[in-house]
Length: 215
Image 1 (cartoon, rainbow, N blue to C red):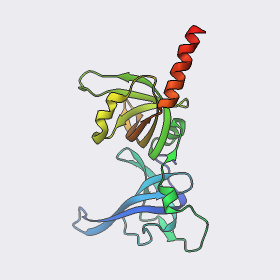
Image 2: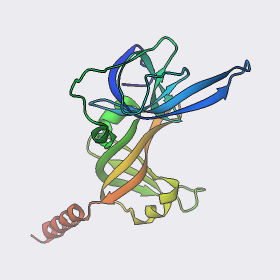
Image 3: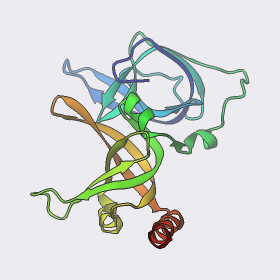
Image 4: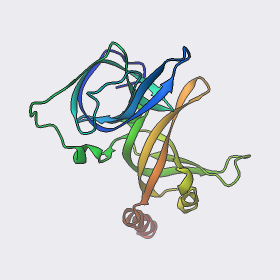
């Protein structure tokens, strides 16, 4: 699914949902919903301007005629007034809540095609590390997995980990890939909440490079 798609039909499980009362411009009070849904292939946030009693945590629902739109840089499933939502009560062998809550491993190429992704794992090499002027000690890091490349940033509370990242490191990172407008195009960056340096692979590759110079 991609930003701008409409007429989306999906069977999914509601992983999280929260309800919030707001007041419209006309002064009316109403309830809006936000949360996370997932199916076999993807996990993504959703938003509904209408109260939907069917959208309860751990329920399997069939959603018809929704649309996808970027919200805070993330592809988000929007449930509109004319969207149909129904609970599936019969057993259909759908993955459990626990299974669907786990992050999915994706390629950068897949994410580029979708213009973003929610709670994914990426594995690749750091191919560029720089410090642009005017950004203090912040680093600009580029991650490449062989299918594509994107920027890598750490969540605010993890910023100090940037100092551990250097050129050539193989890493495994988990987080959200958000889209930002840049010179009339979309630039994608992974906002990582967890980054693991795969040191064993790094050491093996460095040893091979060392041996190749002397054999």
